[in-house]
Amino acid sequence: MKPLKIGMVGLGRLGKRHAENLALRTPGASIEAACSVVPEELEWAQERLGVKNLFGDYGAMLVSADIDAVFIASSSAVHAAQAIAALKAGKHVFCEKPMGISIQECLEVEAAAAAHPKSTFMVGFVRRFDPSYRYAKELIEQGAIGEPFLVRSQTVDLDEYAAFQVGFVPTSGGIFMDMNIHDIDLARWYLGDEVNSAYAIGGSFVHPEFAQVMDADNTCALLTFSTGKMADLSVSRTAFHGHDTHTEIVGSRGILKIGITPVKNRVEIFDSFGARKPCVRDFYERFEEAFRAEAAAFVECARSGATPIVGARDGTEATRVGFCLTESFRKGRIATIRR
Image (cartoon, rainbow, N blue to C red):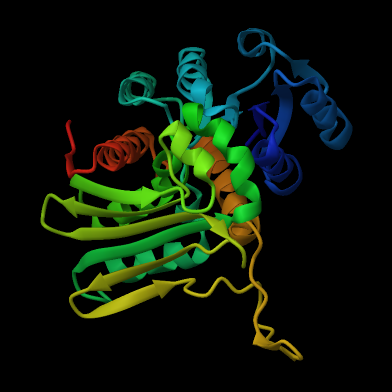
């Protein structure tokens, strides 16, 4: 098959990682164009990856560039509009989370994806592509722990990243949309059920500036599902030891635990500080293999016509629950999912 010709959209911290994966590590992929409103990012694409077709205007890239697909890693506020425009232009679309910054936007993307079935559409829920998380899903499907009824999951980022995140809250949707959305998606995936109510608490315990934008730096949430199953989710922006993401799935005949200690490798250090294990530093280091697998899966689906394991509806439902948690947190009461 011919290589999938991709237009890379957004080349910030994560966009650069995606671009390098596609250009240097993904068989069957070729970045033919790059789009960004930041000139320095376009210069990086040209110098680092040799991309010749550079655009400051997204619409111009869709019209002029010889591409089969777009890979969207731009600002959250434009994800939905860019995804819809690409689908209407007949392109395959990978869209980083969140798929939209409102439920209406997500529903519009979902409708556009349904109206263009020949175009592959995939949302960036990267943890589904991590080998350990995928293996846990296989074990659940094999009945290894009986019927799963509870997911405990957390996402914890380094405190040093917190300060710059304050400015993104108005457009990212806040802590539940920006961080918990991965845990929400995993809970739906593992339990095979939909959320019907949500309750969230939290506060700005380390960085009071988050409270000024009606957000938090640490939260806890409880989800109930239509069949009575449960999820217990937590988030922190203020870790000092490293990126600490882990998940536990409880079933009627056993428990699966994934990454409970965020170790960098299997080395244990014994010195004057005692006994310790180095931790992974950030989300990309923890999920580097998953990001590569995710890119490969998108390219394979677009080239072969296979159905991705995560699609537009998953983006809508995770966003719906994220907004419900935000409502609960701000109003201090249980919120019911409205569909």
